[in-house]
Amino acid sequence: MHTSRRLIYGDEEALALEGMRRQAQDLVEDWEFVFLADGGQVLEQLAADGCDVLIASASLPGVAPEALFREARRRQPDGLRILMTSPSTQDRVLPCVGLLHQAFPRTSDPNQVLAMVANALRIGAGMTRFPEVKTAITTLERLPSVPKVYQELRAALEGEHATWREVGAIIQRDMGMTAKVLNLINSAFFGLQRRVESPQEAVHFLGMDVVQALVLAHGLFDQTGTLGTRRIRLEDVWEHSLRVARGARALAAMEGLSRHRASDAFMGGLLHDVGILVLAKAFPESYDRVVESCGTWQISLVEAEREAFGLSHAEVGAYLLGLWGIQGGVLEAVSLHHTPGSFRRSGFDPVLAVHIADEFSRSASQHPVWEGTTLDQPALEALGLVDCIPGWKKVLQAPGW
Ligand SMILES: [Fe+2]
Ligand SMILES: [Fe+2]
Image (cartoon, rainbow, N blue to C red; front, side, top):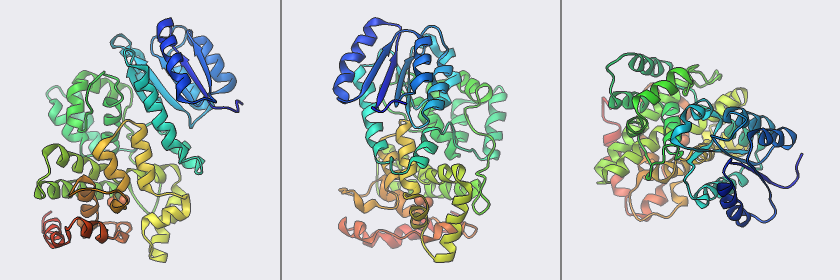
């Protein structure tokens, strides 16, 4: 096993190899870099010694990229896996979508690729104290989807008349599907110049034929629909997340945020508790004990998770989504939804919208695990927003909401 950190870069073009070689040396000093032009050699290196970062071209001769990334994940589950693609390699890319963290067009500037690597390593370094949780996140191919939403999507894709708007609207009702489709579209896989933050836009850019192939032939989404826990169900998290998403969007509109930021509030609300899915799915028995301890000791979910895992679902969700290429207001809302005061802000924003909606968007049937949250009064006081609380509460708790 290698002792220093190791990056393997596989590309059949000498120029690309040379460009990456020059830039990579500046990334970190004490790393071992391996540059190879043949897929067979990359596979040999992986089998012999694994690597912390694998960057490989989809058209590397000798071995299909799926085999390379599968081996990289087997040898080093918490390693970073990046694919370099071109329009002609789409057939080789689709089967390995679940194994990748990011994909970039081959024409990308090596600096852009390495900046993503540096960022992921920086965030990952904070996770080294929790190796089991880190591995659960880095090896996660997909998040569970709610069966009834998945069935609806399947029916729409198998029919002939569904539009991208309809398909996007179905995906947008499920956390797992939304996170995965945003991962895919923001992986730079399709060379988009700007970030896409809604599933509808993502389906529009991907095209219905690619979405059909990914969902029906390549199993992009998890259709098992279960967390494996007894004390909290996927449907509990789903119902809560949809309610918070709608509430956060309503608050954003009420406070005059732009359409773009209101969309961030909705997406942030939909994905804010995605870390619960990761922890519950990876450690179902421990997570059942976490849920139980909330009731027994009257502590919040965040406190119970910190006690059991050392970190909370907010950090876990943010690490996963960051690794999957989701950034900006959505990532901030996920990361800070329980601690909005830890980040200075100049006014009402999507983070506060999600935080407040999380606190007040309650339903009679909701799972008791959501009860322990508390509103960050100091953060609202600092912005002079305390007087708005009764108005927000009235909107979010109105009958029929
Ligand atoms: Fe939460
Ligand atoms: Fe929540």
